[in-house]
Every structure is written in C-alpha cells, then in structure tokens.
Length: 73
Image 1 (cartoon, rainbow, N blue to C red):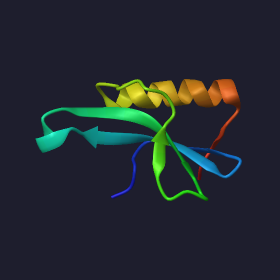
Image 2 (tube, rainbow, N blue to C red):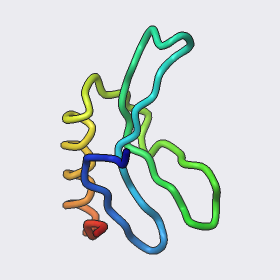
Image 3 (tube, one colour):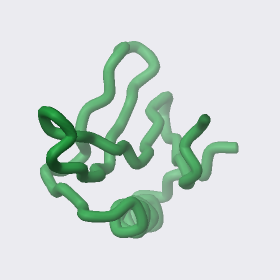
C-alpha cells in the first residue's frame, strides 16, 4: 500500500510524511522526510515528531508552499 498523503518533489528530491515506531511499537509518531535519488535512505527535514499524520502533512504542505515545491504525480 502506498502513502495516502501528498508527496512533493524538487531538484531530484522527494518530500513526504513517514510513520515511525519506537522499539516494540510503544510510541508511534510521524515526521516529514526527504529522500534524494542518489542516496538510498530518507532523512528528517526537521526534528519535529508529529502526533498524527494529518499534522505532519499540514507542516509539509506549509513547507512546500514556502519553498515552491511541486506536487508529485
């Protein structure tokens, strides 16, 4: 199943919301991450942990608006 939220792209990088869990799934949080096509992994854009996917998506939408990122199709 794919990510149901909006992804953005700019200059070969993709920005999206990622769901993460701590050990033994005791704490679930969401973060805004960037993945560069040259690198295999994704890294956090900021150090904020969001309680819900909707809050993380809202933050990502605001970042995209400020930076002029395009929605990925």
